[in-house]
Image (cartoon, rainbow, N blue to C red; front, side, top):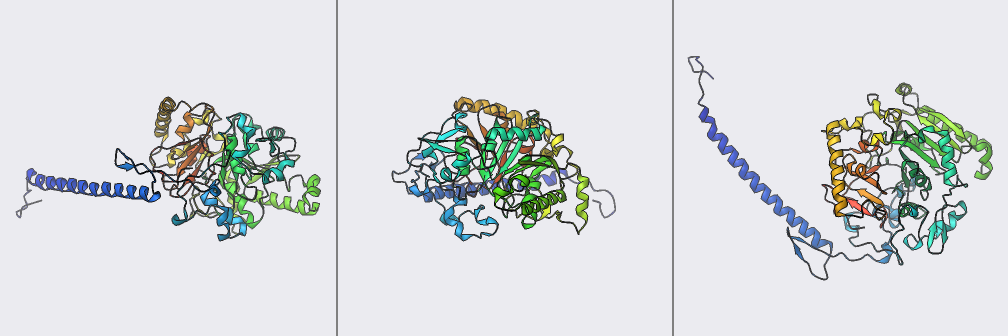
Length: 526
């Protein structure tokens, strides 16, 4: 500033102190006032929500913080297997095109049940791992339909009070062990730690995923709730990772370039129909260099076509269409023998240049949809092209298991505020916390706890800290939080995206431990 005569003006330093001080006082007072309103409103909201949830027959008890204890009533017996978002009683409300009614459809708030899901009559504590992989109590999963329909294929059989799991399947009548042995001969990367994460679509009772656990490969077994009744519940009762889901009209709840291997054993998914959109979703979630394994129609049609109630010409046509579609989206036939065919997703991005031609199908997806967006995101008939700058996402570029567990993934830098330093800090923090947890909960690390859900993971640090214990962890990343699930998969762990404002799509009585860090969940007890 200058005087009228143009000479510099020396401002009085003390002149601005009073206004600044007054501003600070006013802002502090306003902050205190608004904080008081927020806290009082939050306490009122929590109290009203708790009181509304149930009328307590025995009264309430006051605990520190003015949070009242409540008692939830028990649901009626018909709700013993209630899964709110995959409820067969609501299927008639949704279309049958592409089996969309089997997808996730959560009830509105006024239809949600606020009661404790009861166990079936005669329920017993689950058999402990690893014995549980081969047997479970019949009364815990009392389904006779699947037993009668699949007993000839050796999925399971009932003996006395138990279901036994011989390890059979439609495409592996000699047992899952022999089937996977052949698969390992076709894919040597299954033996040396290169392949760590897998997904099994149409998993049955998850015998394939169970066998891979012994070989150091962690599998997400995926199946819908359909006329097979409780495939996923059988899997979880056995202690094998599984999740309800179906490839239909929405993306699967996983980020792109996640799994090292995908598998379908006569899962009856029409891969070449609807423009190959289901196979395009497999392409999205499979990392570059990853493998897609198919057994069943139309593989080995030369020998099997008679048993498929079709003609050899029809099956040859189906196989040719499948091979053409896979080639168009940058897969190559890697190996093939007997009933198993293996394709590999190419790591060289030069293949995708042909998608720039508008006359080619499928086309390259535009940038309008985030590749990792996977919560109620519609499937699109286009190819999600891997980011050419992400060199270390490729399967051959990742450290082999178990080294990859504690190596900072390249994609950690895609997370806001994420870097190798924050990853290492998180890794060290959870090692210390896990030790403390085991002092508070001595059962953790023993055969008493097998199925674990980390309800609000960041990088999968808790799962990594307990990786040597006889348990597995489903890492859950909130749909409204930073999407860190790609980091979880890059380090060789598994997980899913979820919105905790909705109910979780899993059967009741299937998890032994829920771990929660920094997230409030109001979901009803399972």
